[in-house]
Length: 401
Image 1 (cartoon, rainbow, N blue to C red):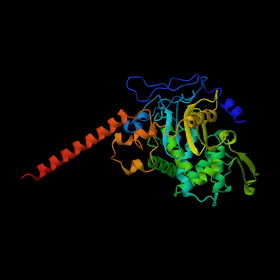
Image 2 (cartoon, rainbow, N blue to C red):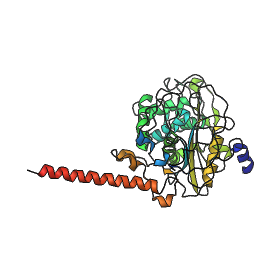
Image 3 (spheres, rainbow, N blue to C red):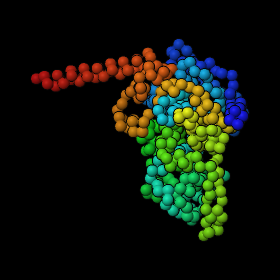
Image 4 (cartoon, helix red, strand yellow):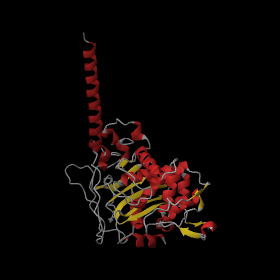
């Protein structure tokens, strides 16, 4: 069954292998990401991202500073996708196994709900019963909704399930408001942005709690991996993400009947070892996806932005990347996911330090190892000696009569 499933899921995704190039090889051009031809899509004009900050592009490793493909040396080529950017990482070690434009800006669509979950899950009691307001129901006509009603009384857990299983935008508004501490969804969005900064997702800026498009709303494949890792670190999120179906209770006062909902993330239903994740789509963002799975005691996460649904849907492209990631050696790496609070704890850290590997290069085996990492470390050490020398000279001059 698994062989038939994966053949169906990836046959349209995989093309002839692209040449695998050692990331960071100065003599070679940046390798392009293997892409599947996708049908033309009607979409609004692409929004202008904020100016690139060089220090942000090397967070997690200098090899990740590319608009093209970065993979470990000597491994099989990743599958060809329609996604404009993607990343595969180990949920437990934080090692990045490969990516395509990992720090390129993209619009998130509903995968932004993962940032809402990472921010608000610890703040809200799932057993508490709350009332949905008219403000919560203020969503774009035709956008995804789970079916909550204004004035309805629901447990917080039910609203979370409506958010993660059916991508309910009214559920996102309610949770942002309830978790803000000020009964304001706008304050909840501010908390989301503060938490993204704490996680090290410095290219992420939320404007809406649901991921509905908003001016200045961006993220990156790398940032999504940081956010997903924070989500999967929470047992409650893991349970919600793997829930296959649940019921939304009747609301007698509003004369609405109860009904069942199912998890729309097909990875949960059709991929062995799936841990869950989140789908997303808007006309502007196109298809976005975050998914995770476990195999042989190893947990991987995949993030992708800007995909088309043909010839393969977002979850199928994610499944193909997960399959590729599981074929890589456990020590394969091209960078790492920074830890929560790591960047905010050292706000004056130099960009070269942000790119430092979490372990010795000889053990990690990334494509930008050896001379590349050694040069970064040497340069940083040399800069430190220069600063130390300048400080001593200044001190002597201050002490001179």
